[in-house]
Image (cartoon, rainbow, N blue to C red; front, side):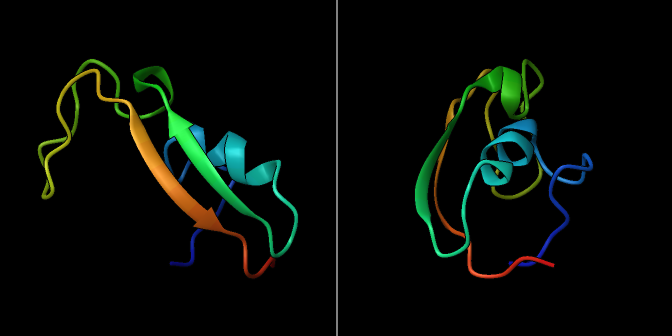
Length: 64
């Protein structure tokens, strides 16, 4: 997936976590609700319940 990081296009957990990664690094991002979708959650498929902690396995494969 390609996206802009560090500019608010994705959840805060991604903005902060991916910016700390090095090219080629693999990481598990654990995003507390305060760094994800918060108290509201997200009803869009797949629905994310309120106050959910989200976990992502991420590999940084390209920058720029």
